[in-house]
Length: 217
Length: 217
Image (cartoon, rainbow over all chains, first blue to last red; front, side, top):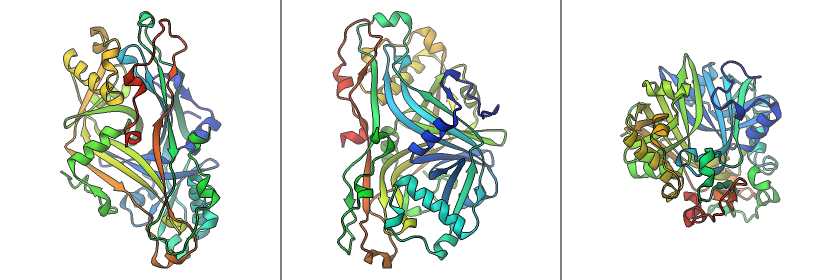
């Protein structure tokens, strides 16, 4: 699966090319960073996404300048990074992060047709919070026509991962300083009800039981 | 401060150009996403960074291919995104995220001289975990020579922010469905001691008391 462009050159022992592991990282992430070029200037924007099979879906208002250009087949790079911990070494320079990240190269194509767009938007919703789609008002035809949905194949991609304890220089292990990892986790706090609620409703079990993937472990 | 390239065009009501707020977002983030171009292909990589005054520092092994090209003045985009919550609306299409993000455009210049590099590396360490620098072995001259440190001015930058409850269509407020926000927070878990410890040491108060900025609120 790695091409010369996605083969990991720095720290190749951290490379991951296994498709299931790449899928798992993409499914755990919430926001991706999407890079594209305008002139010779790169731009990187945070964007919601969803994975379905070997595809990444992206969406935005059809009027968006970036979305229009992306739909035209501009080369893009989509990166998803999960932060797992702060690595505290004995030497200042060996401090690091534990992380998992996926880099996808390719181009986007527009999803045409309201039925296909609805399939993609449902995938978004299920990625964000499973079960929510069936509780809310589905998009109408006018909304579907006004929404750009893009798809990107997961053909050219790779992942990188750092896990475990610090790696110090041999002599430094004799230093009397604590070393290790502070794990980091993204957690959900108590839901905050919209102050504009008109009809009294309790959060459903889909809302109350939802946790970011990391918190479910 | 915004230029035509950094002025926010989509959802301009979410734009932030206040320098203190931009600094606060950069100081709260841990990992940035750095975009650069090779040929016509953009690449986006996760990278550690630190802010000092009106500068962003980046660093990597001096041998890194990307770092070498960046030091040559390649145009880059550095984006830092903080995820604050999942916004649950009454309509599927109005689901969203609460977030704060900063986009910085510019070029990197290499920091030459071991003293200046040490100043920058100390800023990195303090950004990651305040107080740690004074507990560990500082970098030696050879290490400093083998480390590339880059600086990027915070001249051309802007931020975007979404906060608060969902924004639904007027008619949808009559629906009997709970709407609101599930806040997300990055939290530190109990430190894991390096299994290769040779000298018995307890974590210092700098380690034990450290929390991601979001968790300190």
